[in-house]
Length: 220
Image 1 (cartoon, rainbow, N blue to C red):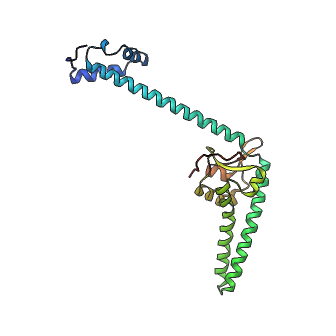
Image 2: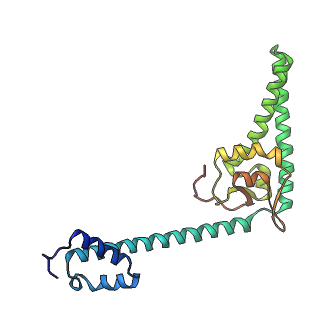
Image 3: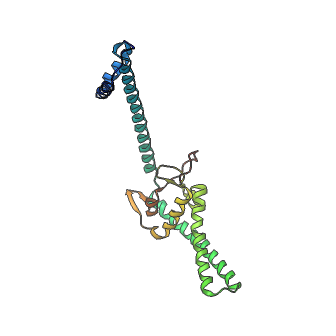
């Protein structure tokens, strides 16, 4: 190879396009042959750059394929672990009863305190409603954020996860809890013996059979 022989700008671009049009096999074969097989240092630099570009693209494609397969495996695991319909019905009814009980207790306490403070009836009623909603919704959010499960869910061996199997974040759980009274008994059927409730679908969560805690990060 003659080190003094350099390509013109047009020749440089033409050779770059020629190498780009070669098959992966030809690029690898020419690269393996090394600089002596080329007429110019420019030619080697272009070939080496094309070889590296394709190697990087192949590596990224392989990593992307691995990530896709891992996501598919996680999705299949979530499907397999989705809680049965009966367990969801029992858990939903019991958690609703508990949330309603403590919500009413909170509303009653706020109502009595408001009247004792001399507030008018309308304001007392509004504060009581706010207390009911805050406590009944907070019951579900607090336990699902802290433990991924309410006390009832723990007893039934269930937990809440995102569709990718992570721990749900606070905002997701708040939205889920607010939707629950509206569509609690409007299940989206997935397969025989399995169900995804409306709030699960709309918030990207699933209730699955409980697994041991992992070191996975919490999702937003």
